[in-house]
Amino acid sequence: MSGLFDPLRLGSLELPNRFVMAPLTRARAGRDAVPNELMAAYYAQRAGAGLIISEATGISREGLGWPGAPGLWNEAQVEGWTRVTDAVHHHGGRIAAQLWHMGRLVHPNVSGMEPVSSSAVTAPDYAHTWEGKLPYVEPRAAAHHDVRRIVGDYAAAARNAIRAGFDGVQIHAANGYLIDQFLRDGANFRVDEYGGSIDNRLQFMTEALEAVGAAIGMDKVGIRFSPNIYSQGVEDTDPLLLFEAVAKRLEELKVPWIELREPRRPTSAGAVPTEPVSPVMRALYSGKIIINSDYDWRDAFERVTAGDADAVSIGRLFIANPDLVARIALGAPLNDGDPSTFYSGGAAGYVDYPTLEQAQAA
Image (cartoon, rainbow, N blue to C red; front, side, top):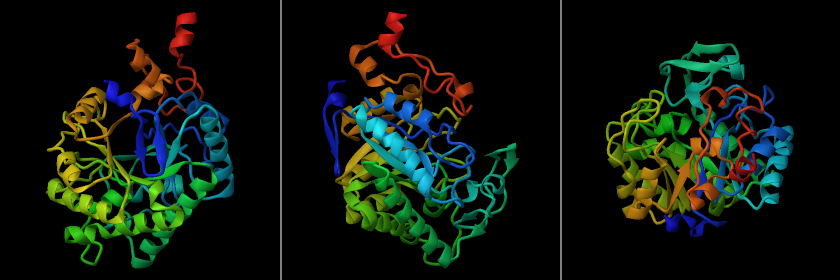
């Protein structure tokens, strides 16, 4: 496992180790979507990660549909995130902002706005809202002026992220959210230049990446995908062919790093994965690849050892173990997480998990 403790360069980012804290929605920002001191304490505790990828953060009110999730579209949010990044940097860490537009998974109960997507197709299952779970509503298909506006929102949120002290950004293109809704043919039924062929379905992602790269420098930009699983109603009939094209496009754009949520066994949500795409992408893409295998991070480590990837991103274990990297280095026991507090909104199950030092002292 020693290779995971080696440094790694991701564009402009210099990581001291290859353990990446995966983006984890925790719902502590309140109705105004403004990060707070509790969030600053939480992220600072986990600064031992080679890189922290922040929880998914809304690029606009329209794009944020999860109760209690933070945003990056106004000054109060920039100020709130500045407290977070200052705390992480004070403890020697690095942090990237994950930029999020949920598309058809935004419920009007949360946003107060009509959802927008690649196509006017309602998502399956139920949305998390301030009033509990409610059925999703039918989105409108994004018109060309919507696409231009949303691409502008990505660029503006990226500029806000850098003003707030983030070391870079990651565009969220996974898990059935807006870019994923354009990329995969299970949600994109358009007949214009943003739908149909794979090349057309790449266009929205391409425009968002180009806008963000122009705003802050492409060396500060990463992107996340979930290529081989059905996620929130989104999948593709030929993921290998699609993500081969994605890899070529990312290479052309010089995007320095990607994160792949790419399990090889059924996920904790019950999704059954198809064939991994990382070997195909690896052959075509010279940037760095971070692997996330849902709950099975040891599988991700094996993928790094095999050369399919350069680093591992870990989610749930970082929730319960603020000093996770140190614990793994020592072979120390790990805390178990409490799922009932993952989205509960308070300090319990958020900043009160003990470090190894605290546990030994107790």
